Image 1 (cartoon, rainbow, N blue to C red):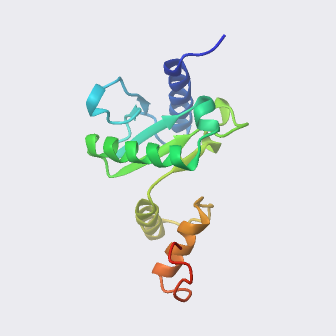
Image 2: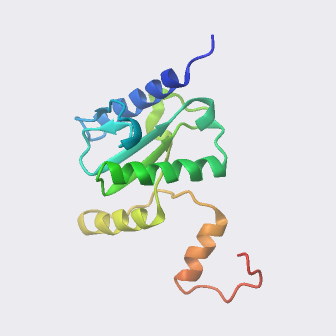
Length: 154
């Protein structure tokens, strides 16, 4: 029996909420639908907008799909009047009981800001950050590394 997209979304959102409850966000809960002014999938975490994607679409998401979801997240973060937005995407082979191991995507400026804030109050973060090589090279070049690119598209 094929599951409906709404059921897949509900299951993914529920898995993330359960994880958040154990990870310091005890008031996290699924947000009721808000129509055109969608403000993300989870509420009860002031200042944070969460967009959750599960099922086959998430497990097999292309770079283009992730880009579109990140655009959706930016709009929803604005609607939520949040300062941080996260796109949480279910990973292939990682079920709902392990939602803490799903991918979390954020804009690079937000990762930089959160990292700077963490340095003030804690140890420097050492977790991996996933990005395209082209984006990593652009970041390195913007920080003064390397020489002028020989490929104008780089």
